[in-house]
Length: 76
Image 1 (cartoon, helix red, strand yellow):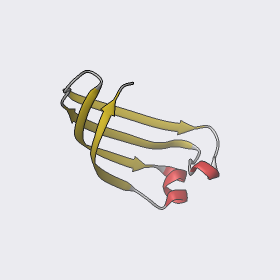
Image 2 (image 1 turned 120 degrees about the vertical axis):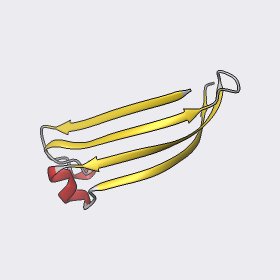
Image 3 (image 1 turned 60 degrees about the vertical axis):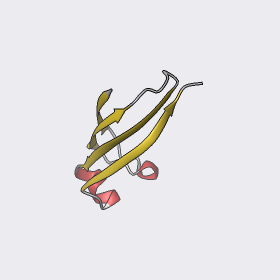
Image 4 (image 1 turned 180 degrees about the vertical axis):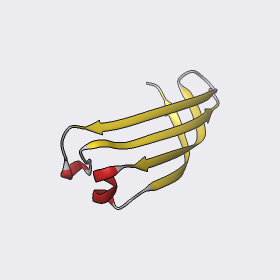
């Protein structure tokens, strides 16, 4: 099963303890490919791309970042 995901974070105020700046803070796009051995047990592999904007970029000192994912989805 191929699972895409898009997350957009925006804030009305600066939240320094959480490294979130005012306005459009970040976007994250990820794609996971998982194989359900059973519905409750599904290992996956994927890729996640994150981009920070504006004040958040200044606070975190990070622009863009890509990450490979390897994990297990388990339902109890």
